[in-house]
Image 1 (tube, rainbow, N blue to C red):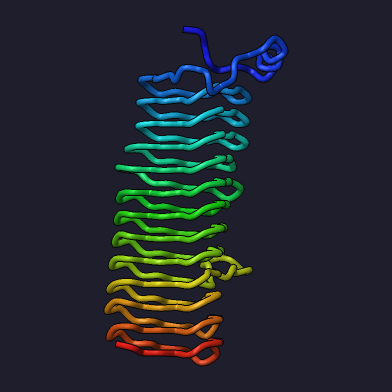
Image 2: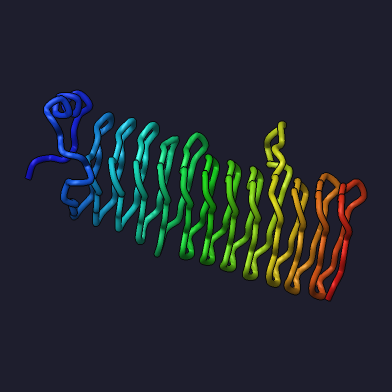
Length: 264
């Protein structure tokens, strides 16, 4: 079978004589581990039952659909989605132009300098860690933790028992719907220039605690049996609302523009 991995010079030559569009290429299925060599382009959807490495500066011009682990090396690009079952997705200073979706065993790690322009979801017990930039929403639906040290342009949601830690920026709402805690934090141990976690509205919907040391551009609300703690460095532009029988503790020095309400 003719190789679908094209070096950049070969691509240019073929395009000059009319290379068929990638969308017209038949999907390929590979069994066993697979590498897209650095500096090359894989044309069309890539489906692999095994681990995949996309080398530095390489491109997958289509969807990347894998049962196994996926590593996107520095400077690599996937022009459509990355969909992984039973494997870990590692995005290291790479770019994904659409969504990233992980199901089954494994997790998702988006490193500093990486960019995902769509949504990111982790639908089982693994962790979802965002140190880079996500242009859409992020969601973790199992028992794993959701950690944001980078930037999320939309919302962040955790629907299992894991905790949510925001040390970066989530421009939309942050919500936790099970027994985990939500931390909008300010300090990172071991750093002198401590970043501030920043979010839109924050919602904790079950028995977990809501702890705020950073900035909430909106309302902080707890709807289950947990408590709300607001530290002295916190800035909240809306209300603080405890809608069940949990406690509210606000440290001296915290800045709350709205009202502190307990409405069981």
